[in-house]
Amino acid sequence: MNTLYETDRLKLENEFEATFLTDKKSGQTLMEDDFYGDPNCGLIDKDNKWAIVAGEHLTIWTPKKWKRIENEDLKWIHSIRIKDLEVVEVLTDPWSKKSAIWEINVKTLEFKKVRDFNDYKDHEYSENVNW
Image (cartoon, rainbow, N blue to C red; front, side):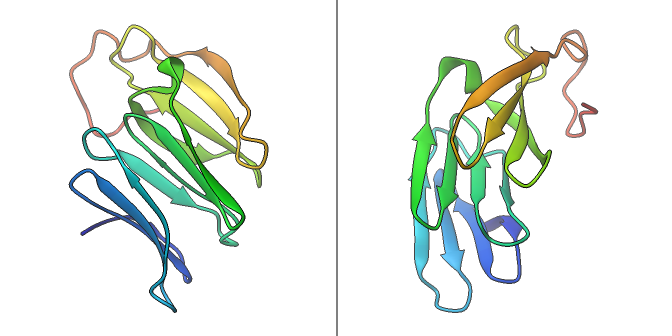
């Protein structure tokens, strides 16, 4: 298993195309999702109020529910970062024609495009992307 992200209480892992969010104390699987290809990134809130995993699509988990978001504009996610307690920023594939930075509210599941991201369109692939 590959660990995508971990806090004191939760662990987000993937094995091949399967992804699991697990409560570390009880061992209970809180979320299980399948991706086309491996997920690229994941985050867990520092207070364990939400988790997000992304790649070919995006999945958001909260203790009350989890939702898989499959949207053509939010496809092939490269990176995720926390903006504030309820909002994350998502970078879609930096080398694609539709590369963009998006904001997603993890409580409401609403998302909006912040801007196009053309900085890497003519560059070679790199693990580290400054955005």
